[in-house]
Amino acid sequence: MQQLQLLEQLQQIRFIDLFAGIGGFHLALANQGAKCVFASEINNNAVKTYLENHNLLKENMYGDITLVNPDNIPDHDVLCAGFPCQPFSQAGQKKGFEDVRGTLFFNILKILEAKKPKAYFLENVRGLLKHDNGRTFSIIKEQLEGLGYTFQSFIVKSSDY
Image (tube, rainbow, N blue to C red; front, top):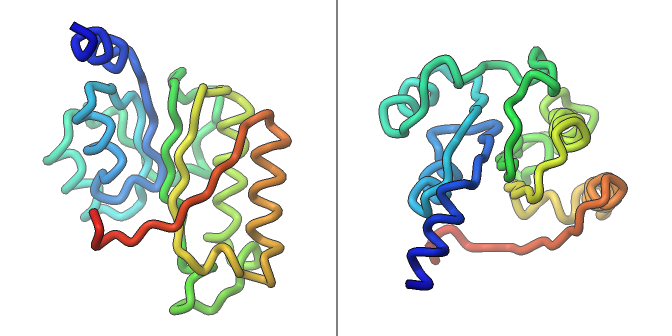
């Protein structure tokens, strides 16, 4: 009975999937009964895979998030974003917010500010923690807390999952 009540609550959860890739966040949340109401991804092959594998109408899949007015994004309970890691990665040039891909984090902030979802999940690489001697991570934390959100970070090893 308790599981049924939890499932009914989860079915009411609406989420958006930014920098969606092929839909890792979508898979996790949809498997728990949540509904994706908006996704954004610029890689055409990833979009094709995402739409093939997930229950999302094509008209709810958008490309470049910088071209979307946050006010036009459907209301949602959870924002998910695997924002570009290249600017913070050991394998990249480590330009951080000096790389246009690094500034896409600020688009997430604009959406959080406009839509005020109850929760958010952000994913990036381990290098984000120490990028620019930890200043980048501090900025991210301060910005999110400045919008009234709590902040917790975890390092997970994908091979464990």
